[in-house]
Image 1 (cartoon, rainbow, N blue to C red):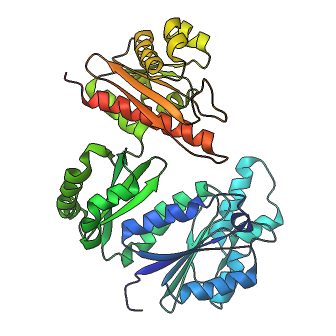
Image 2 (cartoon, one colour):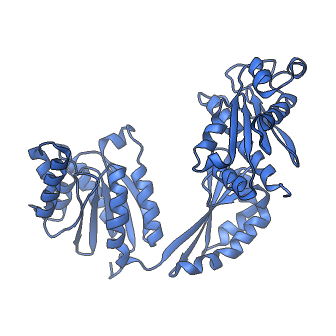
Image 3 (cartoon, one colour):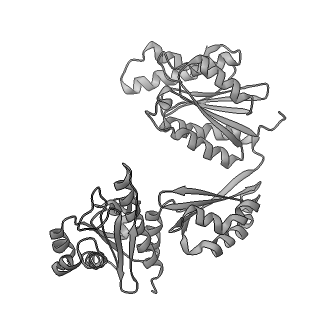
Length: 421
């Protein structure tokens, strides 16, 4: 396979993963880190805690990859057999690793608990392997190299696996790094994946370096623009023409680059402009406020969130006029506008947002499920939008509320960016 190892495969071990009892976040984390190193990843697999099937999976993985990274199966119990199986695969014995045993003994001493005999097995490592210490748990990791193949064994718990990947495995793998992949994530709202793809099809299909790939999310789309470089300082120059073309074709829907989500983009924009926002929510029941307050530093830009589900509370807390509710109903443009104005007034904020609608499961006031109105109110920008979120499944209510909340964040972001000051 040459002197440079270029491809890897992730093999996550654990019956609980196959059964769906836990979500496999380890594979995503490892994949991102490998991409940063420029190590190609073409396959990911999951296998249960069965030595025979694990050995078969190793055979398959090493038939198409130079490096196989495993997670899980390094614990002290009878079904934790990853080390034993991988060591046997390479024809190696398990031997006591004195430093690991010393760490284990000191770990249990600090806890004030006796170390059981089965914990001792965690200090047994494949002979002639590279040991990766685990300061966050009892299971050290390791790497076995033989005949151009490398097996890397990592613990399963993410709080143990991630630091070991960052501080031990990445330095271990850097000798194989021939290039790096550097990406920018472009986040779009208000445009579907198919429409965005149509606008940018020529760019997506013709670009080799950088590449442009779309990813659909709930109510939004992300484009990942990725440059393959030897020097990361070269990446932005390589990506610049593609980024300019994307902005020209769909910039009106672009809400941020490398921002993660709408609430983070809004908090950043508000902070940059020195503005504050307040919310009055009906059908979303405080979801938008929860999303905002999940962003570190939101207290600098978020004044208040009013959750006013009943008509009486819309009047009492948000100042919606009884006549508006009587004439137009709670689910109406007029009520949404008065909610936005009331939130702005109550919070003393420059921007107010109001959300009202029918999230189901049954029509109300003669209004269909999925009809939502979102309004933004400020001294320089007002807008009200009507959403008809038609969906008929068990998750419809959550979907309607999430999209309503996202549209509210996006409207506030529009107002913020339109600020003339």
